[in-house]
Length: 111
Length: 112
Image (cartoon, rainbow over all chains, first blue to last red):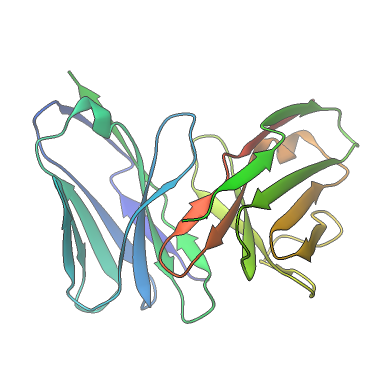
């Protein structure tokens, strides 16, 4: 079946260090979305990428969608303690509005 | 984006019983999605609920175990039936307006 894998599973960084999580799909995606889930909270939408090779930025966060539309990455520059949480990618499949979530990367930031 | 009210926020239930989870959206939406998230894990789609038609279930989920109602464009319920400890999880509803998905705050279910 369709799978979306994400690495690493965990990342523990010192505040101020950079962080990157990678997402890889077994099939071509119509779009890729990124979500952040704080401990004890629910997933919150960050961004959606649709075009091959697309790059979007939100302040210290940079999102990329691969040329083949099968992989994506989220990069955080100079992490802060407020970045703590689990980051999920989610692949949109065809036009069904279904999302397949990646396994998530849990980010811990040492102050 | 839409605002979703989900309840109950948590419950502890006896095995063999059923629990119905409700989601109310502040705007009309065509599709509502129900997810399960086991502790420390990712989200797994249970089913897609359309108003006026049967829900569409994903592989591994069946209507007898997870009956869904969708009486109108702002409301849906998911029932977890004949519960066992393996059903202990967080259940979330979700909607989309075409750009990103909004999630309810989740129902943390513990089956004892």
